[in-house]
Length: 95
Image 1 (cartoon, rainbow, N blue to C red):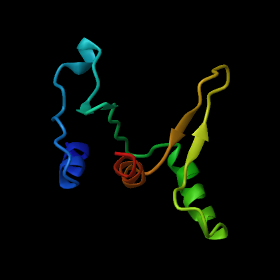
Image 2: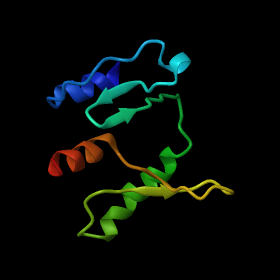
Image 3: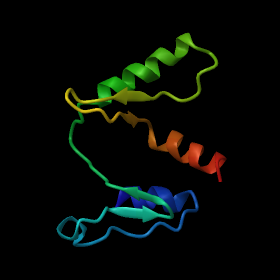
Image 4: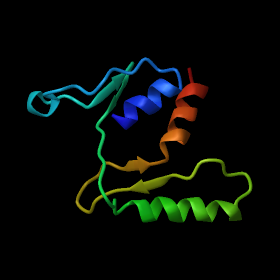
């Protein structure tokens, strides 16, 4: 699995995909206190939002990490979207 390979390349002892996890209600990849639900599609709709955030960074010299905050209508919980490399860099800085 590409996500596990990416984590291992950065020195994380990530566990492989949890087979049967969907049936058992588990996640795809666990590393320490982080549980990844890994999704891969031909084209992800929110990608254009992240691309917009990345392209907007040129207007803000002090900005290092592009992030998309999103919430569905009718829900109160917000979610954030960021690039995997940026996320891992943030995790490593806060160890």
